[in-house]
Structures are given as structure tokens and as C-alpha cells.
Length: 436
Ligand SMILES: CC(=O)N[C@H]1[C@@H](OP(=O)(O)OP(=O)(O)OC[C@H]2O[C@@H](n3ccc(=O)[nH]c3=O)[C@H](O)[C@@H]2O)O[C@H](CO)[C@@H](O)[C@@H]1O
Ligand SMILES: C=C(OP(=O)(O)O)C(=O)O
Image 1 (cartoon, protein in one colour):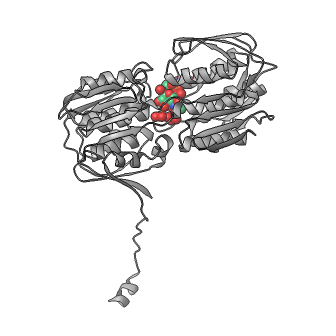
Image 2: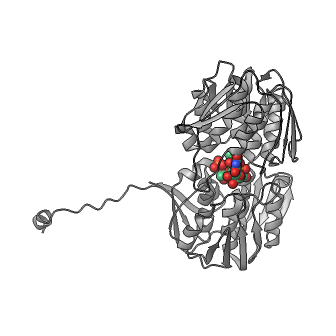
Image 3: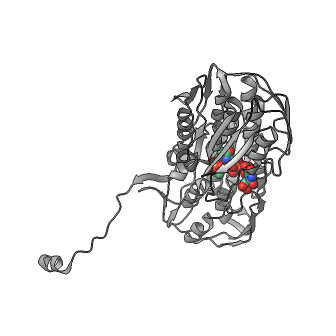
């Protein structure tokens, strides 16, 4: 089993560079399927397990995909297959993002139902509602969702009940090749939505309004491969900002875009952290004593749910009582029990968590319950007394490239090891007698 071992107590200093954003690259790679002519070149792609998974999904659909030197090249000009099997969707829910492109290109898509996961039930009803409004017939059965349209999808007016990131992306991709104009209201405004729209427009699509609450997409007849560099990962940036703040260090997070993380910057400043916008990124200087604050996760530009567990780690070290309310996912507090194993004074009350700080954190063996929890537990290990061992690193590898190496370069005492399982063999009594 692989573990990350952290010995707490080191302040972090130096510069760390953020990778391209996982949550931008996955929909962009799914969108390359829309190009029936020419290759797409996607640059600044992080070497994450999720990227390898989406590449496999595309290969399985008959696209030609290569991934070298942080560039993914996709040729989707061949006739595509239409099924994304469960083995991929189980590994990574974002596999459902190929549905909009396939439906638009092929008039048919069959994608395994994603099921729930550690952070909530995560239905995709809003994605399907959009496809149906554009004329698709959607059927769910035998663990699959099948969507089919007679001829071409048609432009439609769609209102999302919640500004879902995935639904906005999937419907936007489908609408690019529809006949007529699609208007989607109450859409997500995340920077990753803007990045996807920019890529689609480079492919020849006509998408307007990305970053606002309403998208207007004029359908075109054909899309072409395009060249695109992915935006920096605001969640990876935020995670290193917390690493600097929690250790009372001084770190330049190179590539962090302040406008993408304004809610995080505001909350960290309220906690007494010094944040300086520099030409190359954002510098974070941790104070001697952090102050408590309340946080509520919300769709962008509200506080991102993907930074909730890392901020929980930071608030464990703050003086006073803090409250974190999770409004985006109904079950994103699995890490609380793991923090308790590290002696955190923390309790769940409905959709909120109450923290009394500063907790006297102690190293322990803890298990990553999801991707951001993995990072948060490692951050906590940086300031805990003694040794913290974090397991279930498959979650971490979905979203962070060389996380422990980047922290070590900033001065953390951290290593990643492969430990051989210790098996306790009980010998029968006569064997012990023979050895006596
Ligand atoms: C690959 C990717 O980009 N993942 C991000 C994306 O996930 P994802 O796109 O899955 O997140 P959504 O914005 O769709 O989900 C937000 C909430 O809406 C609900 N919902 C969503 C769709 C739907 O059809 N019906 C429905 O009820 C979900 O269960 C959840 O409670 O946005 C989340 C919210 O910022 C982030 O935490 C994820 O990191
Ligand atoms: C929840 C996340 O990702 P996904 O939607 O891919 O599970 C995340 O990036 O924190």
C-alpha cells in the first residue's frame, strides 16, 4: 500500500508552480470529439490519473489520442462509437461529459450511469433535461443512459434548476452542433466554463455569455480541431496557498490567477493571512496566529466546495470558533472523522461543521476519503505533532501532480512510500512447540 508520511513542524518557503486545471481539461478533452475535421492540440495538460482515464474513454470511442510533454493531441475525425462503459465512468464521473459531444456528433450516445460517490449522490437529471429539450429521447435502463435524436439536435431554451458545472458543460457542447439557437439560463459561471467556451469558439462554435448566468449558443454545421492551452488550476493553487498559510510560511504560488480565487483570497485575508498579488502569481505569508471565520460553499463566484476540506484544515489552527456550511454537495464531510483521529476539536451539525480552535493536532494514520480530503489531511500533517500517515492515495492522484514532491521542495518533511502489507500468520501450536 502506498502512503504519504509527513512529519509536522516545518514552515514552507519558496516558489511552487501550478499545473493546468483538471476541471478545465476534462471537458475540453471531451469537446475534442465534436471536431469531425482536423486535430485538436490541448496544452498545459497535467499528468493526472483523471486525464489518462478521459483519454482512454476517447480511444474507446475510436478517437486517436496521444499524450506527451503535457500536450494531448486528439484526432476525432473517424466515425465514432457511441458507448462509454461503466469501467471508465466508475473511475471518474466526468466521463459523462462525452455524452453531449457524442449526441451532437452521432445523434446517439450510451453512457454508463455514474452512481453515487463519497461526496454525494450526484444525479445528472439537469444534463438529461437539457438533451431532452433539444429533441433527444432519453432512456435509462440496465445501468446505462441512452440518448438518441432523429436527425440533428434542435436549439432550445433551457433553465437549469441549479447552476451545475457538468450540466452547463454537457448541454453547451451538445448545443454547438444543434440546428438553431440554444439559450441556457441559470448556468454555472466557473472559470472552467469560460475556458471550455473559449475552446469551443476556437473550434468554430458560436458560444456567447460564458462567465455570466446565461449562455447563448448558435448552432453550426461543423466543428474543426483547434489549439488551446488550459487555464491554471485554481484549486491546486488554493491548496498550496493553504499550505503556506497553515505553516506560517512565505510561498509564491506561480500561475495562480487572483480573479479565479477571489473568495478564497477574501477568506484567507479575514483569517489574518497576507496575500500579495505579484506579476507571476500570488504570494502567501502565514501569520503567527490565524483568526476564525465562517465559510459557506456556493457556486462560483462563491466559495468553492473543492477548497472546503483544505480550509477546514486551516481553520483547525485558528483561534476561536468557526463554522463551515456545505451547500453544494450533501455529503462532503467524510474527512471530519479523519481530522478527529488527529485530535481535532470538530463536530458535524447537519450541513455545517463547527470547529473550536486552535486544535492541538497530533499525527495519526488517516485515510483519504476523496481527492480534496487527501490534500487536506496532508496539509494538517504539516502542522501536527509527530508523524501523519495518509493512505488511499488514488484519490490524491486524480487531482494533484507530484504533490509530496512540490511540498518537499518548499521545505516540508514528507515522503511517499510503498509499504509491504504486514500479515500476521498464526502458526499451529505444534510449530511453536518445535521452535521452542
Ligand atoms: C470534473 C469537474 O469539473 N468537477 C467539478 C464539478 O463537478 P460536477 O459538474 O459534478 O458538479 P455540479 O455542479 O454538477 O454539481 C453540483 C450539485 O448539483 C447537483 N446536480 C448536478 C447535476 C444534475 O444534473 N443534478 C444535480 O442535482 C449535484 O448533485 C451537486 O449537489 O463541479 C463541482 C462543483 O463546483 C466540483 O466540486 C467538481 O470538482
Ligand atoms: C470533486 C472533484 O472532482 P470530480 O467532480 O471529478 O469528482 C474535485 O475536483 O474536487
